[in-house]
Length: 264
Image (tube, rainbow, N blue to C red):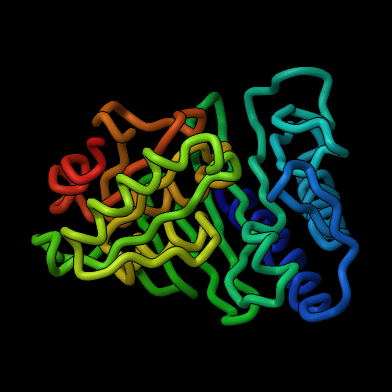
């Protein structure tokens, strides 16, 4: 069963990524779900491909996905909650994609009885496939990866993102960013939370934090980072789950310092 989950999840990620790559830099039909929250025709095409491939392998599984014909955070394609479901972001980094900025990915996770079992994040431009299996570690293109060994914040390269409702929480967001800029070696804001988390898992970033993310933004990355030896909590140090209001992820060694920097 686990082998089939991995095979189907990987196939879906690669197929969706091929669509993203094919349509990249072409004119896009862009619609706004919020003031600064767009969706393109490619988001929907990629999601359709992912769902179709998974349904062929697992017709009884449920889905939790970003693009549900405007229905928002809602489980769909099923008659209610199911113990086995796939959590999908067909295009994480839609704003980047719509502007031709090359930081975006496909993110897919599989959850059984409320426990994440498999996660895959695929960057189609760099052809980087990040995967994690519960209890089996994290990999990049088949090679095992681990979080960084950085122990001091002033040697750390951090990542963050800004929520779509940033205009409603600008003072707090900027205060946290100011703290992080003052304490770390640098802060990057690339615009794809899933890729940021994959980069923490493989040691490119030492930590990541953001507010108001959705389950599909973090599900695959959560498993990647934990399987790579990292640590994830909320800003106040509580255990993180995919419905938490904020996320603080690190290599573990920096976590206490990260949480201190997030206090405003």
